[in-house]
Image (cartoon, rainbow, N blue to C red; front, side, top):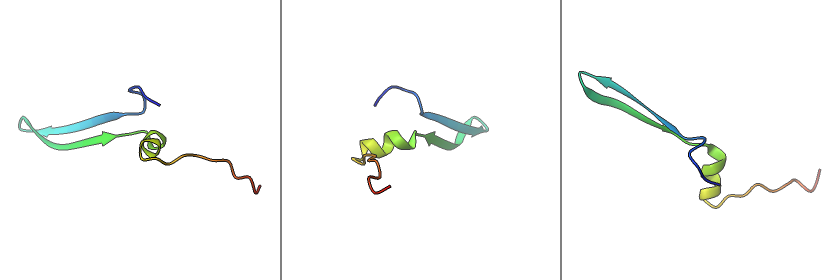
Amino acid sequence: MGGPLGRGCACATENGRIITDRDYYDQLELYCQLGSHLEPDLAA
C-alpha cells in the first residue's frame, strides 16, 4: 500500500498561530503498517 490517498491534515489558526493540528490516516493502511492483516473468516 502506498501513496497519498487516505491521508490528510487540518490546522486551525488564531492570531497567526496554529492552535490545533489534526492528521488523518486511512485506518486500513495504518493497520497494515503496524503488521495487522485481513484474513477471511473460514468458519462462515
